[in-house]
Length: 286
Image 1 (tube, rainbow, N blue to C red):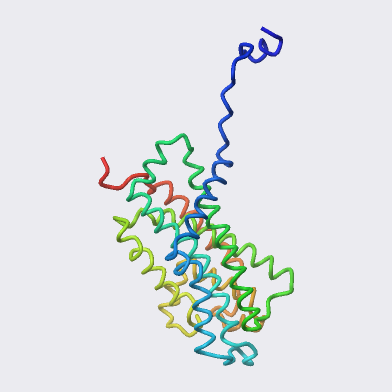
Image 2 (cartoon, rainbow, N blue to C red; image 1 turned 90 degrees about the horizontal axis):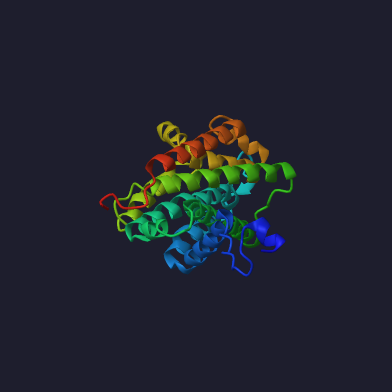
């Protein structure tokens, strides 16, 4: 043996086994596969990625340049832009993951992945990467569309973009873990779209996405306030609407502190539910 061989314990001329890739590296590779699959799926693109842009275009046609607010200084397109951003984040996080994971569990994909050398954490890192990339791309596209097509004024104050950053990250993180947890609810791949999309659509109607939140009945406001979408939409309104619109909120305030707390609570609850309820196989699997 040479000195190197004695130190390493490897006989001279022996071929070392290649080092196994780290979970992070595998997670990045998994995220690339997830993104390719997502952008090849026409239904996912229409109902998750492009849905907010389509709805914003419809609102602009229906309401035109009608003004809204204390002095009617902005139009409906700009007012509903924050809600569309919030809905888009939840669509590509909660809805997309809840449906796709349910399908992957039903067709045996998860079971097969569990039998490979890939660590389970790499699978979840891939899903996180999918949500992060798609939500950033969707939001950027939506903002560019609103600014170029409808002349919506985007914020220029750094403080507003800082608020946008933490609201975006907390909302996307909460939506991601809740989507993973909710994926265990559908009994089959066939029922997944209906089981997931229905509550998501209801929440959009009562959370200030399609309507002025303050105009909704009080009991609907109270129900919506339990869930993260209402707070995500309110946080986004604080970024993209003039300061005087703060008085149009139910509390008369943007409630940044409470928004952060509630989104963080849902993030923690989602993580707990993921740990307790996530399954790699169908309920009826042996």
